[in-house]
Length: 382
Ligand code: PMP
Ligand code: GLN
Image 1: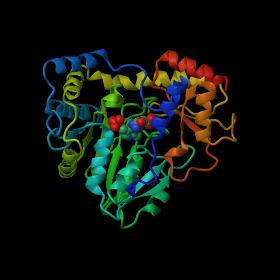
Image 2: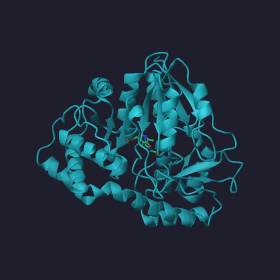
Image 3: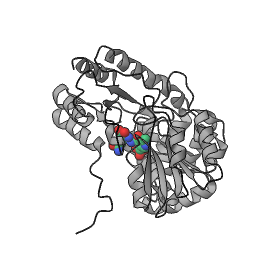
Image 4: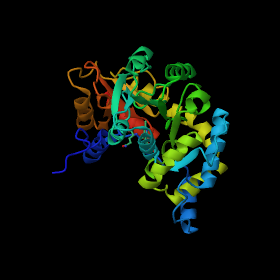
């Protein structure tokens, strides 16, 4: 019998809820992905490049033209120059970037700190490297960092702290002053950062993203990860990138070249073309998604769910204490799917030790207006 290296891991909640939604024919507001397509010009560019014969391996580090577009976008958005050759690597999804960064940083016996609730891929990546995750809960109700608890969790085995802003599942944002606090906390220690910024362009109400890319002291020890899937409405393309100082990038690439070697070639060509032709796409994203958030929240205002409009990501948390407080959130998500035809994600699954009184589910509002209207109508009847 093979002894599992990940004995506590099953099939992810995203897969399970999407499967259940499909089985039942429920509106799927669970797994995070748009139910509309990415820009037509971007999709046409893929066909063009496939037909033009761009079908063999891309360079291991990513197409130079795409890396240059990413560098240009970073310069525009955050006012910093990151070198396309030595600091930017294109990866098959942010997930692979995170995995490779963890393998580069963690050795047996090392500890990595995750802030719960946290994205599900972090812990298995750390465990496969022989490390251990230390879970520090974010402070409720706004999912802010509890600096005291974070400071207490750091010890001589701590090698890595994961950040995720905008935060999945809560939408919470780290501010520039949070980054200052973190920098002060780890100054002089051998601790690195993986900053998961896949929702960097999904921030609302005029707030600016505080990227680790624009914080020189933190960036010096960071891998900053993003995903074209989120930014261009093409999650199924599984194409992302990681930005890190040259020494860290060199170590990441040693691993990336044996995990995947390279990302998918025609997708990289298409993204490079589209980023050059349509640089305003990223500037338009906040208002595009804010309109969806506002519509969904306005409609949900007629329901018994309690919520505050999310500051970032395409996820809206909703408290169902006034509806079925006796159900835990996994049971609630299943009940909503089966009985009311709207699939959601329970929030407790993002925790090692979920607060026992937590009654939150997550809805994804990256959906067409008619999907949001139908879903809200059903949720108002709950
Ligand atoms: N991090 C977070 C917080 C996410 O929500 C996602 C999306 N599933 C990822 C990483 C992975 O992104 P990708 O699909 O590009 O691997
Ligand atoms: N990030 C997506 C979410 O949070 C899920 C991606 C996946 O299924 N791995 O819903």
